[in-house]
Length: 218
Ligand code: AMP
Image 1 (cartoon, helix red, strand yellow):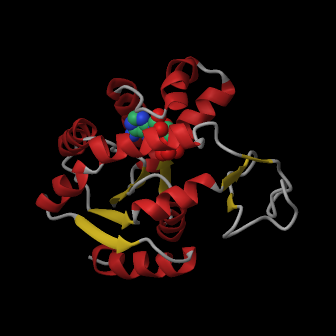
Image 2 (cartoon, rainbow, N blue to C red):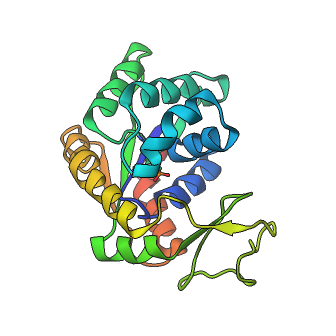
């Protein structure tokens, strides 16, 4: 089972992808998390991708495609993968289709979480994340019990360096120019499931599960 989660920054795709991966017992592959981890660990990949991430632009396709396909070839990914943040443009989508086709496999479905631009801007500017366990918080919608500390593990909360107004604007521009065309790409392939991403996490989660029901039991 190969499921892609597609949506603008902060549409909630990471949370929903993690939830579906947990329910289906599949690996959750989040490219943004993989890149951030590489940067924190100071690996060669981390050094190569840091400046792109800081500017809010996409990391070059060769690096990204190589990293994701390598991850997908690991034994724990053989039953399938939940892809979150990949593909991010048509070239990546085509590379993924070709790599899967070589193994007589294909993407089963693409869950597109749709949220208005206004709501995305509101969500992005209040976002805080636990440095240790990555649990997300929002200063207005879901604040932690103790300011600056994670409810789950007590870890320190931080704002992603690419969550400043300027970089957020850039990331949104990149999304609309490069990633949004994937909506037509997967619609034409008959694979797109659109889910309304406005509302609480649980409410959106129920919509995602309902939308996936027919596909997952197929
Ligand atoms: P995210 O956590 O998904 O918002 O990703 C954070 C940053 O990582 C993006 O702004 C890009 O710089 C980089 N990134 C994540 N996924 C991709 C991808 N599929 N292609 C290129 N760059 C990516």
